[in-house]
Amino acid sequence: MDERTRELLLTCWREVTNAGGAVGFPFPPVDDGHVRPVLEAMVGALEPAGDRLLLATFDGQLAGWLLLSLNAGALTRHWARVSRVQTALEHRGRGVGRALMEEAARSAHEDLGLDQLHLELRAGLGLEDFYGRLGWEEVGRWPGALQLSGEDRRDEVLMLLPLTGGRTVDR
Image (tube, rainbow, N blue to C red; front, side):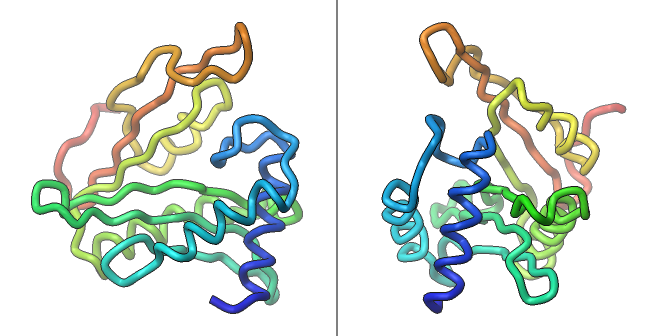
């Protein structure tokens, strides 16, 4: 990954976090010193058999990105985890998040042969509705699992996207 792309990812991640996004840094504000080591570790783990980044661009600028983490173990090789889903602040409201999630599902199924995608999210931000409109199903919660401050505990919501016409919830 070139240095320009790294810097664009860093800026997006920092700005999304500081705008209240639940993308891995629960206690904003953050600066480059907080984000850079986590970004470098993530980039260092990228490989064909492991984690992958999906980038969305608009007029040559980074509009958003997500991380797709594959599983190497035989028992879980049929699914991957989606995380770090974020849209650059200046590109919000343009369908970037939807496009990222749709491409992640397409690529996971068609390119990687996966049957499901999983994700976890912080309750209380309206994200369940966003993902639900894209076909994701809530399959469970860890009540009060995320403690943001003394009295602010949120559920961690577990979601699933079947990619092969398998399990679905009646809507």
